[in-house]
Amino acid sequence: MERGKLRGLLDNPDVPGLLRGEIWIEPKVLSAEGFPQGPRGLADFAESMGADICFFHWPDEAERMEVRELAALARRRGLGCALVVDGPFQRLVSHRDPCAVLCESARDPKRFAAGLDQEKENVMTALDLLRGSEIDLVLIGEDVGYRGGLYFSPDIFRTFLMPFYEAVLERFRADHFVWGWHSDGNVATLLPDLVSCGFRCFSLEPECVDLLDFKRRNRSRISLIGGIRADWLMAASGDREWETTSIREIQTLVGEGGLILASTCGLHDPAFLSNIRKLYRLVDRIPL
Image 1 (cartoon, helix red, strand yellow):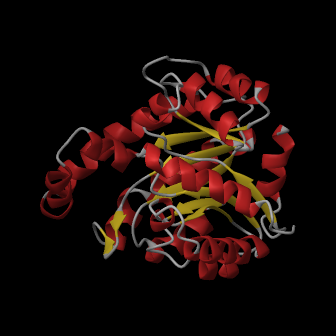
Image 2 (cartoon, helix red, strand yellow):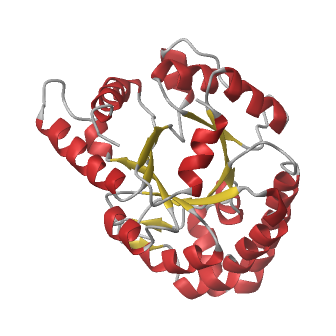
């Protein structure tokens, strides 16, 4: 895939378009398919699946590849290149007890803020290494919700995280990256703020957020990553009902503008691969 194809979809969000790419692929899935861990395995796996985009996690602590090497890995395989970067809250709860962090946000906001400030510096340091690179999409991962709503109040999010996002987008304005945002859960109350901030691509759970309504409200401003429901990945072989439902739902989303088809829950079981491959074949029938 030419690099311009991904950029074309991102720059024209109200034009129907469909690309494919998985954001999260568990190591055991790569191993089951015979691919090594790390960026090279991810790129080879994406190519073998018939994907259009390879999502690399940045920074990659294991191989410590430079961003230009990641872009070259993708280009050699005809893939678009996107990066996934853990946001400050995601980093904070990854090395501390999440429940303790959430309690702290309510009971000791100064300590909560201090922990986030340290992680904000770490994220900015990682992002500074992207300057001048040929990356089109940078997706910030920040799991701040669950099916029932947010882990904390919208005011806490707006106070402690929104100013950081605004600073990031302003700092890298000249680099012309498209910035995306991911969270699990029902985060609908946060989306207007994030769109206003300048995020142009969103990875959200279709089980928790009405993707079609969100897209229709912001048709010319955003692109979506996702659209694959978790239960479609787990559907039994021979169950044709999910195929009919999935193609109808995906076609409706594509009709509203560009979609990067992906499973928001990620590929954490090799058993999911059969249905992912089937979905990739099914969506080829969608007229654009």
